[in-house]
Image (cartoon, rainbow, N blue to C red; front, side, top):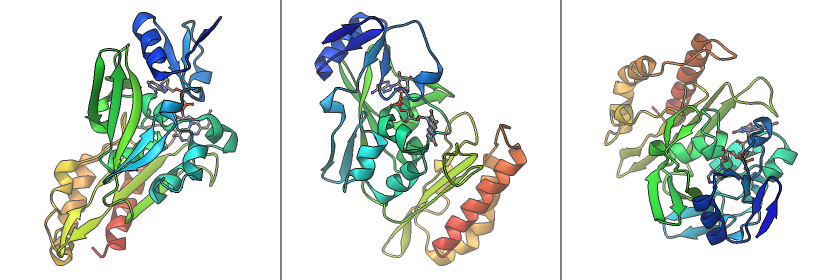
Length: 274
Ligand SMILES: Cc1cc2nc3c(=O)[nH]c(=O)nc-3n(C[C@H](O)[C@H](O)[C@H](O)COP(=O)(O)OP(=O)(O)OC[C@H]3O[C@@H](n4cnc5c(N)ncnc54)[C@H](O)[C@@H]3O)c2cc1C
């Protein structure tokens, strides 16, 4: 371990967890979110921890280390296409070389582009402290804008991403520019069918509210239906989403955000024959 004036550089995950349990420290991965909120608290630098930088396939799950940078994920043949598509639109290469998926998730911004993909795919998060480990769905990790259930002694270790349904996706990030843009609305939808029935119609919405939005109760309207049945329900399905999505005003109006969300949802349905 190296001790600096402004923090600690552990060389193993166990060392990092020990430091985290004994000191008030701020985990620092790539620093691309932290760089704009300087605080007088020592940092726990995570970027030397090889344990957090692995990506592997484990049965029907992709395991992504919290410390994987965007660049390393773009380079990996394991990274699913939908995640790569979202990553390619994050910032610019200099930020992608430093920024990590763990930082993106733990910063808890509704604009977090990689978190959106983990949200729609039912990914789970592995959190660890010296006391042990817990795994929870990403939806349960967030309690508000910038707020998570991460305990002061815990670190996010890895993301467990189910492989099922990742191949048939619809993704759009709407920003002010084609590149280097923070999203004004981001939308992702997965779709799957088995034996002629819809088994997956997951959608998630970024930059719309205080947290990423997903409406499982509304998804249930189409689950188990044929395409013909789904077409009949399309009007009421869209109407329910129209009621459920309540955007907050940001740099663009709430009306604009709502219209974009609904257009993208309709486009996603059309792409899937509904
Ligand atoms: C110019 C610029 C453009 C950007 N564009 C985008 C964009 O288009 N889309 C987008 O989504 N984001 C964007 N960002 C934000 C940022 O780059 C990402 O959110 C990035 O993924 C943050 O990762 P990091 O490793 O740098 O996090 P850090 O800044 O190191 O940390 C962020 C937060 O997560 C915590 N943390 C980090 N790792 C862990 C861990 N393993 N366990 C527990 N807590 C942890 C930190 O304590 C901190 O609270 C941009 C930032 C900049 C500066």
